Image 1 (tube, rainbow over the protein chains, first blue to last red):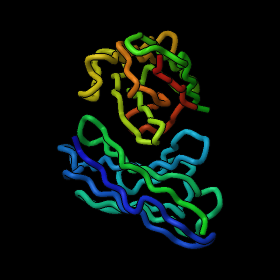
Image 2 (cartoon, rainbow over the protein chains, first blue to last red):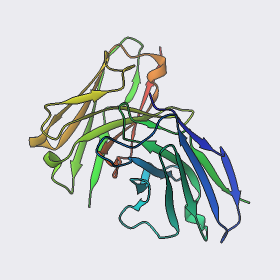
Image 3 (cartoon, rainbow over the protein chains, first blue to last red):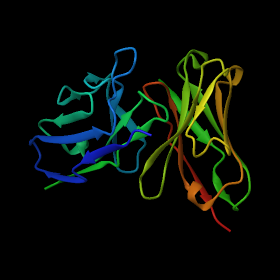
Length: 112
Length: 115
């Protein structure tokens, strides 16, 4: 299975600040078709996960441009700029390149 | 508006069987692959498996393949997860989600395996 490793486990941020979350995979996430199926999800307290970013850098419908994804191969980053209260929660990366699909352990974003 | 509503969870004894359902609305269910994902009490996310839009093909996490079965009824816009011989480690919140992007998730249903 592809192991997804997220760092840091937790992150404190001031409102209006910027943060980055790293996600590394144990194998390249480049699919045979040339696409890289790396996604980012946010789970707000008491809610289901929601998709933020798919295929490394594509924002899902309705997602603010304050969220941006980048990376390639095995190294990926989610950046959140001008952090707002509604951004707090646990962020997960996930890969859909190779079965079984797998997720990172999560990064908890908290207010400083 | 896309909606996914799971049901069928609860307290179940070890070794028993349980069938979860997920009713979809707001999109053409028969056009999409669908997945089940579970989240343990410790918040670990685990992909269970998925099913092709016409129900003709499924994929499973190897560790669950022998005990879990995913099916669907497109006429009812409903996804199912049949769980058999459940164990304490199956205790989790189970989500149905639209594949392949996992772009919409249900509210989740809790399954607790305990005697």
